[in-house]
Amino acid sequence: MNFFVELKEGLGISWDAIRANKLRSGLTTLGIIIGIVTVTLMGTAIDAFNRAFLQSVSAIGADVLFVQRFGWFIDSDEEWVKAERRPQITLAQAREVERQMTLAQAVAPKAETRASVKYKNRSSNMVNVIGTTEQFLLTGGVIVVAGRFFTPGEADGGRPLCVLGANVATNLFPDEPAVGNKIRLGGAALEVIGVLEKQGEFMGPFSADNEVIIPMQQFITSFFAQPDVQIQVKVTDLRLLEDAKEELRGVMRKIRHVAPADEDNFGIDQQEMFIKLFNRVAGRIAAVGFFITGLSLFVGGIGIMNIMFVSVAERTREIGIRKAIGAKRRTILLQFLIEAASICLLGGLLGLAIAWPLTLVMGRFMPARMSPFVVAIALLVSLLTGVVSGFFPAWRAARMNPVDALRNE
Amino acid sequence: MGLIRLQNISRRYQMGTETIHALRDVSLEIERGEYVAIMGPSGSGKSTLMNLIGCLDTPTDGAFELNGNKVSEMDDNELAEIRNREIGFVFQSFNLLPRSSALHNVELPLIYSGMNAEERRKVALDTLENVGLTDRMHHKPNEMSGGQRQRVAIARALVNKPSIILADEPTGNLDTRTGVEIMALFADLSRKGNTLIVVTHEEDVAKHARRILRIRDGQIASDEKV
Image (cartoon, rainbow over the protein chains, first blue to last red):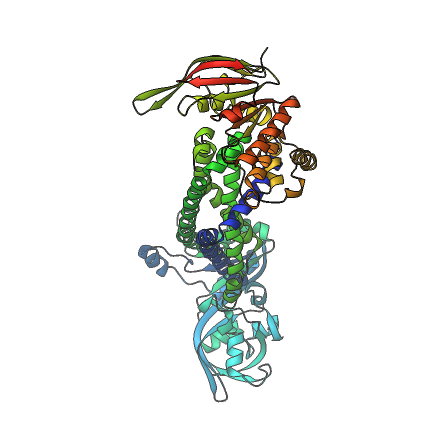
């Protein structure tokens, strides 16, 4: 017997059955609609969350290695105590790294502190002040939107210049362009030569939006004579990241005279580690989220199963007629599976139709959009719910004895 | 060789702890083109016999052959195929699908035999014309009279050109006049060479047949040609 003919017949029957019991079908579908709406929104929210994170993290740069006294991820108190005893990383060591590294495209030292900046009667407190060199433009993942960054000469000479983060610039200069004006920072008057592009909120305190970048020599003069620096190394090729990391480690150990048996007295980190940590956490959140939203779909599925049992019982006689006329078990099974799947698919489509505007609302707060992937998954899941929950009732229908079924009133 | 051959057929049902002997050691042959009435009071076993001949049920003991097929050894799906190909049912309560049009009801056996849509429609329309219902083909059962419904059912029974047409009290739900019309239609079908088996308890209906089988207590009490 032709499978497609059967399929077409099954679709026709299920459509008739759904139409004949509009209220019942509607109420049953509601369970699936709610399930699909929650699963879709959950998927979209998690997707948006990931995207927001990756957007912010990508500012760090995937091809940049970060060397500092403390690694990014310290898991225990002992590690912390050990790290505390490590010697500082000095500017001289940073220069040495720059000289010795072969796989580095740019090397920038970065020293940080917090201070207030002033312009006329306006001021910003607790601004992140960064002392660095012109190479920070390559390693720091910052983009200058107005003016320019320092030149190598300006950086070496410790000229009284600065580049402002987006938020600092808008705070100090609400009505006039920042470039060309002089701000006061750490007792010195610095000319603003550039403003950075806004990076976004996600990174919080790590965001460059709240920074003032000044030449390293200026930083030493105004703040610390012996700053503890972070060395940022941009590798020549992302594919050589691991090689570069090994080279960097060797160079650092040599410079810092680490004995062969001792462990590193510095940490080398990269964006990937951040992402790995995030993925682990996000994966757990997603698992819990999908489990909870999946429960509502499960409840919807039970509703479908229930109503399919009713539908099979109601149509016992019809099943008997069809079997008498020559319908095989498979045909009857298929017919009821199609009916359950149709109800669920209908619920899935309605659920998506409801989730769509909600996603748009969500889009105001985070980069949420309903991806074709989420749509496909939602439809697939609703179809699967229909097939799974419809199977048992359909099986019961398929196995009916035609003599008994025909006798049913 | 007979179209239908029952050899020492028994059918027992288990009802709780009690075993019911619905048919006991029945042997019977029916030739192609015969018009047979099966009669008997309720509980005589005539319905069981009809279910067996209709391949809706299988015997507990004995061998049943229909048109050369050993039906007594078949499984569920094979039985469905045999019913589709060899048997056209006409029921007392019509047993049409209530939500489907007359045309679709008639098409149904052809759907299950896998005929393509175009051919199916043509064959179904031809058959509806034979029972005089071309103008009612898009009506649903509840929009038709009892006589019209039974004609649709007869068209459905005929549409696959089965070896036997098996009618169970075909006039039981019809008024006398319509019943007579339906029996005239049966007589016509018989004249055209169809094999008809009618199960009934009405002598009026049975007298149209040319052979009458009387069943009593699960056995054939009499078998007479008229």
